[in-house]
Every structure is written in C-alpha cells, then in structure tokens.
Amino acid sequence: MSDDPIAKFHQWWEAVIRDVQPKHRGAMCLSTVADNGMPSARFVALKTADARGFLFCTWFNSRKGQELARHPHAALTFWWEEKGWQVRVEGVIAPVSAQESDAAWHDRSRDAQLTTVCFQQSQPLATEAELEVRLQQARQQYEGQPVPRPAQWGGLRVVPQSLEFLTFRDNRLHLREYFSRATPQSDWEKRLLQP
Ligand SMILES: Cc1cc2nc3c(=O)[nH]c(=O)nc-3n(C[C@H](O)[C@H](O)[C@H](O)COP(=O)(O)O)c2cc1C
Image (cartoon, rainbow, N blue to C red; front, side):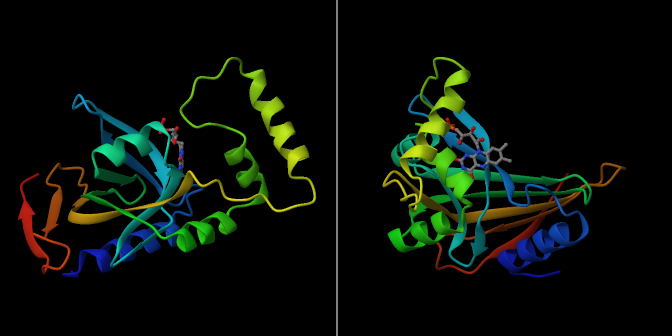
C-alpha cells in the first residue's frame, strides 16, 4: 500500500475512471461552514489533484465562495459505489493564480462558459423560464467572440491536512487508512482506524 496519500488517491481515481467511466468523473462533496457554525455541503467537480492539493472551480461570490472566504477550511468526500471506496479530505483553502483559473476557464466548453456567465450563482431566481431567457441573452451577447472569464469565477485549492481511504466491506469490517500531517511541509503519518 502506498504511503503517499496523494499517490494513493491517484491510483483510486484512475482506477475509477478506467473501470467505471463515471459521467461526472470528478464529482466530490464539498463541505463548508457558515458564520453560525452551520455546515453546508454540495457536489463540485474535481479538476486536478496533486502535491499542492485538490483544485475545483466556482464563483467566489457564491454561498460556498463566501463561506470559504470567511472560514477557509473545507472537507471533500468521494464515494465510488462500484468500487466500494470512500475518500475523505480535510484541509485549508489556498488561492489559485489567475493563470490557473484562466486555464480552467479555457478547458470548459463554450456551452459551459455561457451558462456560467449568465447566472449569479446562489442568488434567487424569479421563474424557471428565466433560465432559458438568460442563456439566450448570453449567446447573443457573445456571438462570434470568446466568452471572457468573469473575475469572480476561478479555482480554489484544498490543501489537505488529512485524507482517509475507506474500503467498504459487506461484513462491515471496513478498512480505514488515515493519513495526517501537522503542516503542508510535514511528512505524512499513517494509521488505521476502527470501522
Ligand atoms: C456532479 C455535480 C458537479 C458540480 N460541479 C460544480 C462545480 O464544479 N462548481 C460549482 O460551482 N458548482 C458545481 N455544481 C453545482 C453545486 O452543487 C451547487 O449547486 C452550486 O455550486 C451552488 O452552491 P452554493 O450555493 O452552495 O455556492 C455541481 C453539481 C453537481 C451535482
């Protein structure tokens, strides 16, 4: 078993992509905390995972973006049913360079860029019909030209302090491999946890 949790994460993620071919290959539950201590969770898409951390993209002024700006701690949870694997990540939020956010923006399809720019994520919506109207307006506005990345949209990185890999077993003797480190510069320590 790998003693480098990032390498282990990659082994698992690549195995899932290869063997399961999920439609949303990077889907992960992102948990944040509000001022009153209330947690909130939603799925986002993992873009990359490497020694620097786990990168996802969003609106900085969305609910999650504002919560992370005020409380820069986050948890990520993956569950890959076909493999019986759960991964939990806990860490701190680190900003991402404008160049990296630009690269992520250019990776998106034009359709995805247009649906991103035409909404103010997390704000109230008057009617469902407004969705189509706004998208049509954005199509017209940017016809024949590139869709620029909004300044409020970009990447955020979760720099992990701990990762836990759970191998689910039908007899409930789940294997839990827990990795933690005191600081991002420290070595990882590994231990097993009771199921
Ligand atoms: C599979 C999946 C992937 C998603 N990926 C993203 C994403 O990468 N970024 C994002 O902002 N929202 C993504 N969403 C939408 C979020 O779940 C959420 O509805 C939205 O970001 C607003 O959350 P907030 O109001 O807590 O900020 C995704 C939803 C699903 C179901």
